Length: 264
Length: 344
Figure 1: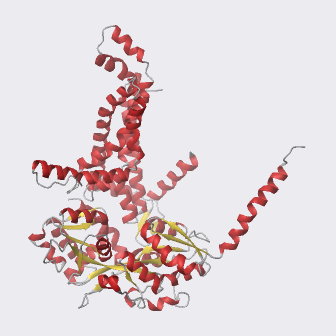
Figure 2: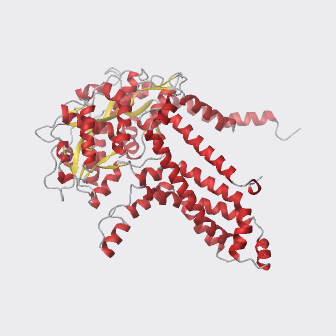
Figure 3: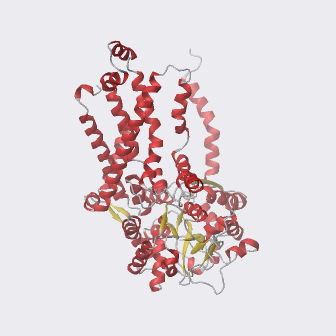
């Protein structure tokens, strides 16, 4: 771990304090200018806020949709359970870029939704691409299987006899779920949420392809600084800001969960 | 006594490894590692240079496929090593200039690369071999557009409102084209920015990469685009009938080529590779499949390819960027583009 994670991060941290030069690309220095550039420019704040907004919406949606799906999946005794499991993870068999290409076919002008709208309802041509909702839908499609799988394993670990006991004492299924199952699943739910949030904060292909050039999130911005500008020190600083923000919010989420429900 | 002693194991392992070590030594002097883009470009290098020219000359080519910027980064990072990992790095002309300016690449002469004498005068560079080039043109769908724009200035007309598309990753080249329009030079960026803001206000559509322009054309979302002529050639060959119009104020050239890092392990093979790169057959092969123009004067194009890639008469003004200026200005131009064109 030290060799593969800490040492490279150390190099990256050092690079983020260097100075950019158009010819030499990176000049050794110890300067906070890359971090100051980010935090003093409203444009970069906007990108960070957009990334956070999209991540929160995606995480909340994945948890809301994923919780009932995972609970149902964990509790079903159907012989179709393996098939349902397979259907849940099937989207993960396709690369995220390929999946995004599918959304592009659906969302773009001349795409399926546009054609259906025009042919069936006589609607005006519509392009759903290159907008925040398209990015949110695209990332949800990628993150939802991860969320459901994580939550399903959490629910599998909770003894179903607890629900039966609650039912025997007159509790309705929903009451048993919210009063008994959900509190027990809260640490695992937090892990699923954190996983989903981290994946979204670092999303690259979906914001680029579905969001288009006028929609900016942190990971494409980082890539742009490195690849478009060759500005390694600024790209390294963006990487640390993204990582720091993600870690800080993950820590906050952990604190927000009452201590008695936390794992460990 | 054990059946296999440690000495037996070591001896056996040495015997097994010997052929591999000997073969590696035998081939080391004849291997050329080329850091290149993947896809069609890598395939065409193999089909037009590696297999037909270098293999018969006894040089094995190994492709190190990746994006340009990591390749440039690697060249910088390996500058202090006695031997780098590639013999040749494929880069665009701007990065070719940067690497030359940073003194990281070997100067090239007609002595070590004889075919350099055929390189078109405007494309010559002290340490960068121009491999292919294309012009930035106004592309349109002739089935819809009967009177195509003749200049970038025409794109501000109300009839093109919301109908013009560009790729955001070529911002510096578009700004150079706008500068050419406004002042006849490629470096008047203030005037160029002013023009681009007006074009943006006229509903300019930006796309993340070149291939996303084709569906936009097909669906009727855009009717006109500003892209490289080579790409329109590929689209035409793919059955999509677009045409290219050279802007009346002149067209900016994109040049792609190769450099030889100073610490390349096998410079002799790299010089041979660069010479092969400029051979007429290799140049014609790339033109036929990718639509890029030959950078040499002894590779005429004939047949359909010649017709499709012919520079029209009267010959339009083809402008090579001022690399000394653009390589320094590029980060600021990209930053301006990101904040003013993309973020609006």
